[in-house]
Length: 253
Image (cartoon, rainbow, N blue to C red; front, side, top):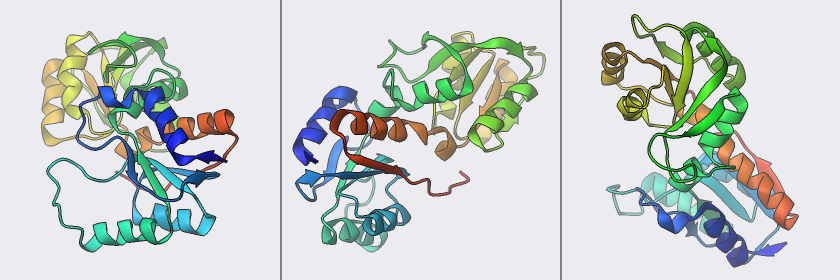
């Protein structure tokens, strides 16, 4: 067991959370009990995850997508009220890290995605590793776009949506950014990637991929961001000897 404040300070420092300009609050979002023995991790602090946390007796819920997003409505009503009420009535802490957990060099979503897909990491197109969000690397062997899509599906358990760019041959260099990063495709192309992998796709993404000449794979926002919180949860187990359970709330998006 560890104090909540020590655990939060450790995570804030590990992920260098204050450095990131984000669309949300990184760190402790809702305070609960002061001592932590059980941490539940998940991608999003949805009601289904909170219900699992209550049933399991979690002291703290750690997620990638928490609450209090920029420009969202302020009133605590409806769905937001029910979620916060669940946390407060059960004295459960909510800890959330968004961009800091995407970027982290060892435990982040991009690092974990590369590890699972077997990419040879070379750096980031938009900063140093640990700071940038558009990761760059190579495949162990050149691959066709359809073959790469099949590999992603096998690794993530979800069939990606593939947009093939006419005239682009085998994929050697690849760029990726988990989640809703489809508009980073231009930077990925400018950095010399043959293919770009992210979570979501917009209508415009198809035209950008075809006209720029870069294959695009939308592998799922949820599917690409399941791994950072798991890695951080397991790190906390090693560091503090707490219990950790990851709950994957099904989400096809």
